[in-house]
Length: 155
Image (cartoon, rainbow, N blue to C red; front, side, top):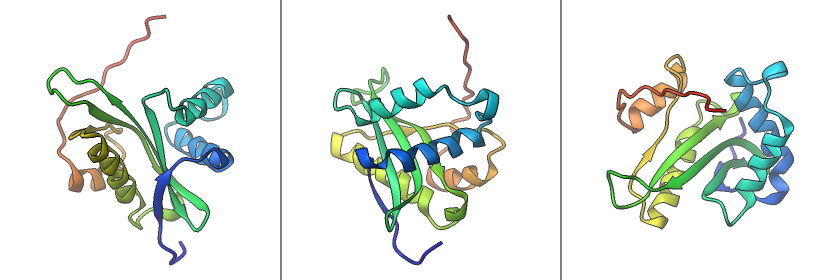
């Protein structure tokens, strides 16, 4: 990785191709590739939501001299155990070549800055139990709540 500093910034419309590449890498990491890849309509809709001022969905990228090396997506929403909104960091990804250089930490700090700007005092996220690399970072930055995630289709 270059010695140039990594900057964290909001997604811009001209980032689409680079974002789409990082998003595909992120999804492949979680097994969504080939026959199980996200449908192109989902990718397009996700991008439109990230670009919309009407949606509570936001994206930040790690920019290394005009090359995107990481991304995070997050959502602000109501919380029934706090008065203030909370923030769900849905996605966090660092390109393989940039791992181990503080990119993930900087992206989380960027989400924290966005939270502070909105008066939100809480961020939560989840990852797979087997994701040891990410968990090593998360264990330094946050507390593990020991909650499990369950999901069911209702369609």
